[in-house]
Image 1 (cartoon, one colour):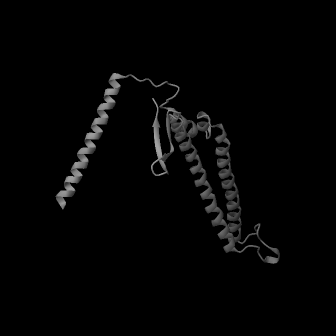
Image 2 (cartoon, one colour; image 1 turned 90 degrees about the vertical axis):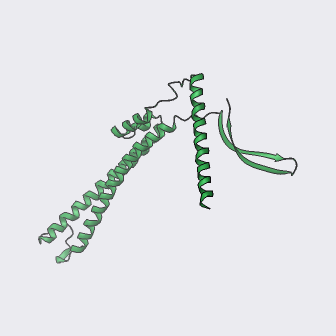
Image 3 (tube, helix red, strand yellow; image 1 turned 180 degrees about the horizontal axis):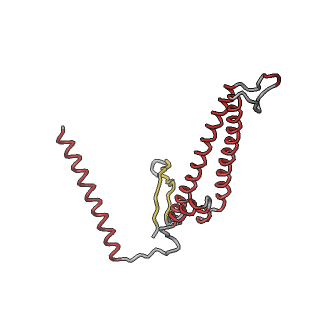
Length: 194
């Protein structure tokens, strides 16, 4: 039983090696016989790196470099939202932290009530402080994540803009009718036109 598995694996490896060797020879033969030139306006090998660099320097600039100007407002809206949420949470965190410190020292704070009955207890001030600090830190992480995401998006978009998508290369469903059985045959086809 073991020798059958060994022969099968060996046969598959030899078959795969010969297939890749043939493919390499045919590509090398094509390069020798036909010189192909790719127009410089279609393929730009440094475009993804440039788009990523531009987005790192100024958020949204990589999207503008790719010609996707409609994405720039979304980048700034996402970054602006994270900055606003960070600022809101940081302000409230500092306010509750100040009130907590004053309450610990026995001084009057913003949350003292009438007749010595506070609106918020010391525990409530501490919980609010922790909650706003956690939300502040999460909004900072979200802002950094959005910044990195827009850099990656600009680079990936620059890569995708260089794909050759035209009428000569198509993939789609094909429907044929079998005259013998009167049944429809559904399949998928990949078409290359030279």
